[in-house]
Image: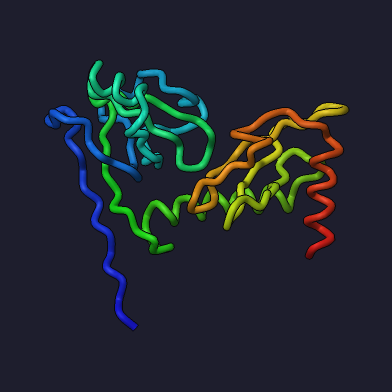
Length: 191
């Protein structure tokens, strides 16, 4: 069996690039000296550590962000969050696209999936439950993040390689509690 070549990750000096770069999977972190800036949910994430995401390259918003100050719009690798990366405060490393499950990016996503699966197994109520919905030739993944008497809040997770989402649930929403209970019960019956 032929050996798979290891993908080489390359630092990207955004400030030296004239044209908007054609990037996809990246990892990013705050540059030294930028630790005091506010960034999205930075209160719960250590941005001095590598974070992973997908660069949005083809939207009008991405074009505007690039033209304004060479910023990149990055979709988080796992959550439905998007961020604008300012090249003055972040270092960016392009990750070579690979279908190898051992690639750095895929390992990160898999580790996050395993954390969610563990929370799913430990969940006493609905919060923390992992839900999968069949979409096209794969699955869309969701996590229950909130629960009231009649409703639950679900949030999309990018655990599948194709990053599918369900048309009804989108990137997350509040839905009737009974619907999610039925999905979870059906999943339990299939085991």
